[in-house]
Length: 362
Ligand SMILES: *Cc1c(COP(=O)(O)O)cnc(C)c1O
Image: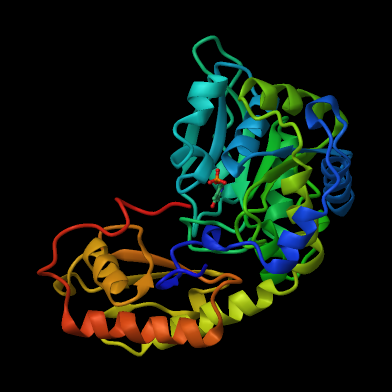
């Protein structure tokens, strides 16, 4: 049941391993909406303990758990502050506005990360004309910002500044464990100044689905209500929670291999004329690279590469993204780089059509 191509489109493309399927098959289940699913309860307790927070709520997707976080902290008419590449603001179908009546104020960050300098002066005064600045959201690792892990210092600085200024803090940690492995810190350290944290199980952790929101008992009670409102309250969800428990035990440390494979892939791509990438910029499992415009555009290259057996995504006019994950090994990523190199050298500018839709975001 493998893909007919080397699939580096996203880290969401992984299939559950035989061992994970075994854990799923053996999962004890109950009605989670009544609090009676022992596997979901175990997962929530496990993640809360790991992040040194009081409680957690299992969710269907990272979009859902992020939006539960936004709604927990904000009232209609409030504003959140976020880097301009942030997933919450750009790639969640307008969720803050639709689901919570919240506006997003986008700050130009560096590689998807903001610092105290970017935040200073952005806190709006208490005045009837203005929306209330309420929440700071950070993303770790950054996705569209380049797959960067934050430094612990910067995380601490931003979180502390927000709290000193009366704001709430939320981490979009879709790839939090990639950040921990790359950044050399624990998940508890990375989130110690943040009120809520969303983590995806369906990305680098390799689960078929699921995310979790973590925070105080009071905030998680509110988030549980939002989860119900958003249509995400679940029944025998132990089936999927079991995969997440398995992944937390077995798929975190191995992310170092994905990061090494991403770097090796980047180094191989950098060998080819017409491809622009600095392998030093590749710090986790996401690899962004650009092609010279005379070669063609990113969608054309993605289409050609797919024909040749490699799936990557266009993420801008001439920018592409490739991901490493537990379903691609070193040999495959090097083969993928060689194929992409051949496509670039042949040129793709005469192609029409799109293999991968507009721009990939997952
Ligand atoms: C993938 C992702 C999410 C969540 O996306 P879902 O597809 O809803 O699981 C959130 N934030 C970031 C940065 C992501 O990459």
